[in-house]
Image 1 (spheres, helix red, strand yellow):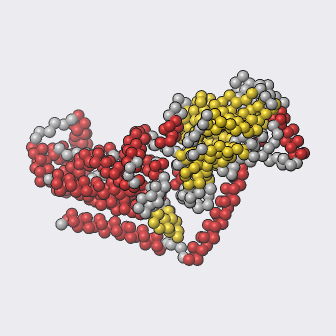
Image 2: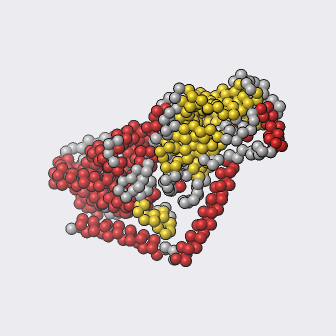
Image 3: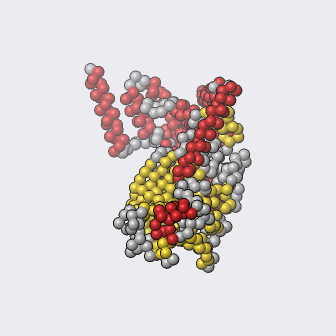
Length: 618
């Protein structure tokens, strides 16, 4: 009867806490007048953000414009660039495209001014652009023998489009003579996101000053693609391979700058899409920079971060000779795995250490296989069932430990009452009881610790798995994002401005799971956390913090806890017998127990402390 009363009290407590939170949210909601004022203020802020974004966009890549109809302006341009004025100024662009990506290359600067993904759209059904409207800039900075400092962004290139088998080849040449030039050569293969990119020169030995610094300068502002800019920004980062194939990242939340050596590739990851520059050899050094542009959630902010890379280059025999690759495409393991020789798969944020290993080599291939013939949401459910079945031995051991502790509860209560005024003696006698009964109070924690790598791996898997992007299930329209079922007229700190349903289900499930486990043994040992408080706190944390996370992750935890509850009910009702456990414990008490070195040392320390306490009282 006492246990039932405890369960009812805990349920009432949980309902009261949840009710108080809802009442507080309702009580503090703004009045209609305040809502109008907030709306007007928000519109002003969004207009200011838009103006700031547009102004910053102009700062990223703004080549000097030349009025080609003005002969004096053209003459001034040619005078400024010296020998490279041989190439006649000509506005225009050339298109390279295949079935998966569309690129537009400008005569001015010879660089890509538009990169559009075919077959992918943003959350509001707009095509996914990685480069558009001047958000990116690629240029070489160098000096000439007549002391001019030039930036290729200001030079005009002459385009020549041709074929090499099935490949499209675009040669962009900034000439100083008919047979002397700087060339950007693009080569696009059918159905591939990887674009060959060669920077070479001919006849520039003595024209380019090799004694002055020569830099490759690559800047980009990451375009927003998701409905939550803060959520997308969390997974938008500079990632790079360096110093013997080490993989590192710049900070995701603040301004960060690093100078690295032996850089093989640089990735500007925009959550589910990436812009990557690779080098056939390795850059000796590279200075990398990332600036966070997102301070709070916004519906109009267009950019998440601003990236920059500055790489010193050297001439070889007085000439440029560099073999690069551009990758503009999805951050998808199936696509990036095609370029194993470049190691681009390592740019995916699987997680670190053993967590990343589990994510990369277990969850990713298992889910890829299941989703190849099952609906995406059902594939998550099936994967959850498989994980829980594999972890069921740990669940069994955990529940067995809890059952043993429950059987010992009357004796523990008796010891607590007997030695209530002597904490040291109480702890000593409790440990003796555990040792005689063959029970370890920590044995229930070990299975939980074993599940932590799986927990973290899944925490990284669901928000970053490209296979889940824009895949619907039930009411969720995107399993890689939150499943909002209601929009709030105000924003709750940490919770957001919407209500997601899967986190609510997951919170309820985890509450009943914890009630079945911690609820069985609610007494708190000295120095141990209040388990009743944790039983209330955990589902509330799940409810609040998972409200803005991938709905696939909340779906997993809901199904996982539901399965665990059924497994534990099956163990309790059909596998474990508490009377047998009690009888076994009594048998264990009769057997002589040999102490290990650790137990012996702990007992001796407690006995010494007890003796010292007695002496001090005399």
